[in-house]
Image 1 (cartoon, one colour):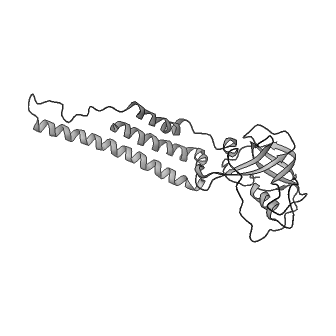
Image 2 (cartoon, rainbow, N blue to C red):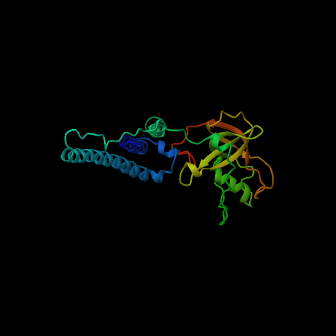
Image 3 (cartoon, rainbow, N blue to C red):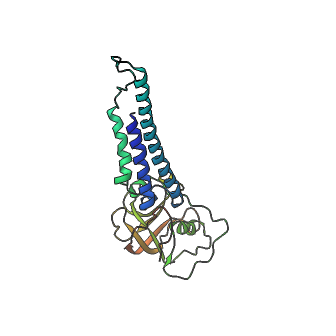
Length: 252
């Protein structure tokens, strides 16, 4: 690959990382918040490598010029030492993903991914469950709701009005899920949390909503056979959170 291409790829990729991590929240579509400083460091290193590569090429040309001027006599220009190779046309395609960092950020994972992933198995609550607050309806995460439905032997969730927030994803055979996508490190290891919703007219896929309702009976409450589902009494469209890859209660 020609040196100017290497320089351009390094510099553009570094600038793309720096723009994404320093001036926008778009990096949250790919990695967890704690990895922001790693993206910034990577961007600085890539730009630095590009600059060093450019300086190295410039110094190399000057050195070759001095060497050829010293050893080459009149009429001895036979073209040796010149690079006549061409960059394969397909190599230019390498610029497409690099330029996308600068001008177009891929959308966050959503219903397309969720529809093709099984629901995540939530962790077992080994130390038991505290009494539920008296608040009604009770704001609760999808993880907390799933644990209460399938692990809480006291069945405290039965009949309780709850509020769950997530985005809409389609269910096989019709219907829909309230969904969250979680990442451990980056988007490549994403897993999904799903609560089946019964009742109400579902908004279009990927719409973020808060659903108010009660547990939909199915299986034995407090065991793994219990349905992770809710009978919706109402739903309200809400703004997508800045970090959509967390199962957290909405601020406020």
